[in-house]
Image (cartoon, rainbow over all chains, first blue to last red; front, side):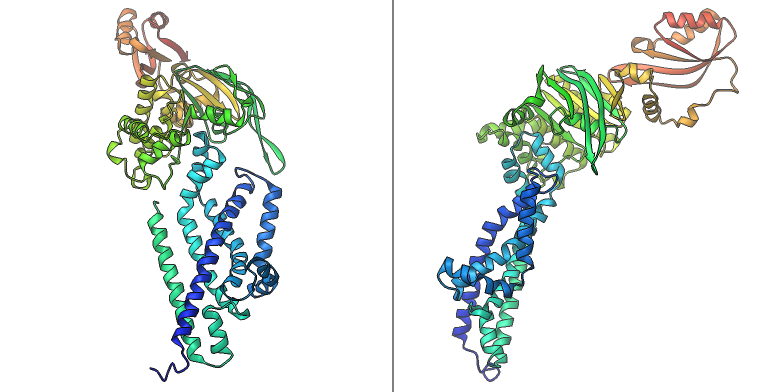
Length: 221
Length: 336
């Protein structure tokens, strides 16, 4: 056993795991905080929706698409100056989070928009007929009705963020991906590569299972 | 109390104006059950949505209690809507809320925050629609009829003066339809609510409505008390609805009784005369023989009626027909 994993420094693995979890948690939190309102806005301003605003919708939609079409590795490099401006560094957990948030927010917002579109129009109409304001419709009808879809969107986004955190290892973002590249790839320590990948697989599986359970918990259909 | 004033409404479809309503002009009185019947695409969904402005007229006004609602501010409109309940073909309940929460929903939206008040009101409404034991279930656990009952309870939560029913029974089986219609009739009687029902089923109109408007291609082609419209349809569209309700094919109806001897007439009885032994008495008085070719005896809301196609032979047919007419029976000669 020890001969197989001769290069493993478990303390370092543990630190990297914590870094990955910190990046994931921090970036997921900000992604939801920014992406949820953005998704709601995309939904509301679209054609034939409550706040139909073709100009606003087009701009939001265009920006979201542009960010989503930039490969994440490129985004990491483009974001370095911005990250330095916000957190004072482009390295480590703090340096990785702004890039992760920018990369994941448009993705998450689109998923939220799709989840909201799944809500039966009849429910919106019924709520309108009760004299609800747009704000009430969003808070008391749309979001609760779309909750299972939004939870599923959070799950998918979290898993995407795990792979993003691994990529941000490329420029010294820390975490398991960083470890895999520095030891596993650059120093040919295959065992480190295997261990980090296994840990990432476990993390993704765990997230998916948790997400599926939450979706089932919130589904009433 | 609800007055449509020269309403026109058209939709923009692919850059073209497609008219949906064309010169709608009539009034619905307070406390009546008013039916709007029409085939799909006739404009009835649009028409009913003008009453709570889910749809806005392109031209014309909608007056409720003399007030032009198209001129209301956003806040005024929300206020108006709280005084108008609505139920839907597909119920439109919130799947994420329990039955009790669905019924409480309009109260919450209206800013009622006292839990005890809401609980008492919800309990009373659920008792009225017979769903007390289902309060904590989710809509997905209910049958169609039960869902529509939740819809009715929810629509009544804010104690509206008007209830709009958008094809409310079209997704239900005949038995459930009857029970929901009974509930609506009961609400109308006990709460004095004005009910506007849109439907494509003459049976619905006949069971609960006081008056009916027949809508065809965005225009009202016939309007009046249900018995009048139903028993003496004048417009082709109305006639088609009547035939559908009697489960008669239009082709079949054209039967001219060529093989039947005598004078063929249609007799319409209404109210008391329906159950009176009129036909036999007249036959004895005038010495005619009669044979019933087709017939139907039923009720329109609370009024019994009968409509018989009869052939008379022998005796004095003219006198017989005069006697029938004198007894308040409508006589239409189909073949002299």
